[in-house]
Amino acid sequence: MFAYGGNTACVEVRCGDEVIILDGGSGLMPLGRSLVSLEQEDFNLFLTHSHADHLCGLMFFAPLFKNSATLRIWAGHIDGETVKSHIDKMVSPPLFPVTTEVFPGRFEYRGFKAGDALQLENEEIKVSTCKLNHPGEATGFRIDYHGRSFCYITDTEHVAGEVDQTIAHLIKDSDLVIYDSCFTEEEFAERIGWGHSTWNAGVELCKSAGVKRMIAFHHEITRTDRQLEAMDLLLDAAMPGSSFAREGMTIEL
Image 1 (tube, rainbow, N blue to C red):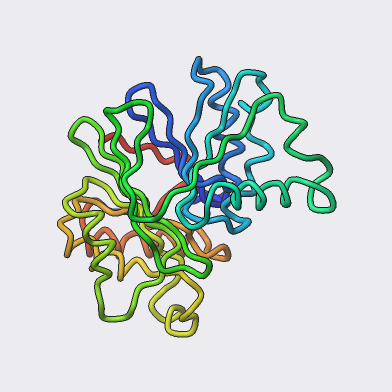
Image 2: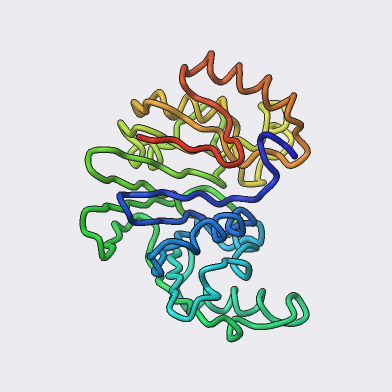
């Protein structure tokens, strides 16, 4: 068992009793199991994009096996009908033995344009978005609730020596930013165009925007716990209170 985890992208955000889910990677499986006991049966899932590592947990989301559960999927890189076609293709033979029709619960799809402000049923929750730099496009999210702000900025590639002003505007003065930190600086130089960033670039971005704390996310899959622990120390020294994401990490703002 790896301390830093091996699941692909999935983050749970709780605003009071409301559960918001960011990305549907393999981490959606254990999250779903933890949610089946809740009275809530209506979930909003915000996708950064529709690459397989961010969707592969959908067919195992336990609440969908309840008759009255609804998973509302939001996407800013493509319209709702295209998201539906992507998911229908992935959850069907020959990639999967059954289709989404086997679920007692239901999927709903909401398309929007990256940069839009989104309105949820709970009007106390404000969701803002921006476009990220990733092959096929991707979306970053900011959630504001009761005077606290959280941002989810993953699967984006920075330009060396520059601060992405679009992202900086979205995350300005936020309490916490989860940031794509897939590569080291040395790896990044050899992987330009792959759509990922470094923790170093994340620190520069967050400092320029007055962010209080950063969590490094989307670790390169071959990274060991020992390597991540060493990088964690460097990150904390560069931006005190910041750290690399761990499986099951809980942060209260």
